[in-house]
Image (cartoon, rainbow, N blue to C red; front, top):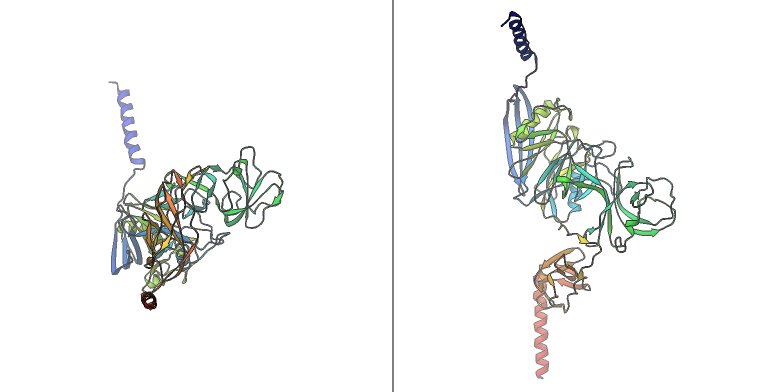
Length: 530
């Protein structure tokens, strides 16, 4: 081998060794983290666990004093669910504190009662518009000003989905008076402009001027409208007000629809509800409730150690986060901050990630924090909620929305119906009779598989029997109606029977009625014998 080749090999070897010393090397560093509680209080409220820790945390040798609150429940095994709540007005957004949002949730859902809650998404502090998408009871109230952050959604079976949302475009949805969706896909092609051939467009009151067209228009009496003023992001819900070919202006609390496909006979009737919203797709299809977070704090059980963006992730602050455990448990954590003299120093995003892992999160996400950080739990007195943490503003901040643990049952999800609906309608139940014991009986309806008793226009009792015990109703007077239900794919439910009055008496009153009946019977027998 020549001296020249040996020299070249030596140079190459030196270069490789030197390069190995100069290039950066990825090194995994396992952070040291410990929680040293001075006090730890644990209690259960209606199946929801609340734990409060006062003490110190140590993160890589840096110690700080903290107050940590935790609420959690297994939404797959317990009678507990997660919903979102807000204080939005029907024709806009807005802000409200956590206690007001709890009140709104309890008022909105008859069958649910809030047990605990925390603040939710980041938001515009001038108007309450959330940063990410917001889904409330299947309605996509807002699609978000960005799709780059995390959406956290809940399905009825307890499944939790998270990640960047997938939207498939705006659509018009038509629900009949029973809340059943008519299976007619209507894509919205644009807002506040005339439709081209084969298109559907929607006008809101932000449109200035006259809709200069002699084509048919559907005018809706709006029950809710949400707009961020961009001209591109909307939610609308309303009922049919009129159909016209006149050149009209869109009035406040009106929505105008245009497009030939909207005018099929029977598609939009006076008893229907029309919804205009973004369609969620992918894994978010079927989500009942969802709102947005930001940093992914824990991934597959491992605390995140690298942040490049987020809510002042490198500084100590009050923080709120949501955690998901592998067994189906959902939990929320608040850490107080900006109150160092009171032992509430706050945490960085790195420390918050460790805290969520300490509580055994498989996945965890940061929610809005700072002065927004708030947690409330149902107190000992009925309908009273206690604020568990110490908000750094010194009072409850008005936020955009929140997550809430609720106990109870969701309203039934109605099966969609074909359009046009050519199913056979079942006959009305006949020969209704209420005996002295308060038992309602009626004749069986052909092809009926069950029956539904409507009480006072809102409460429903389902049965497969042709008798119903009316004594299960609350004391007092009621109006009752009955209808027959069948195989949804083959038959339409019958209409309701004519309303009947029925009174449920207390046991004392019933004894008096029985006494009078018996007295009357005996008197009749005595008079007959004479």
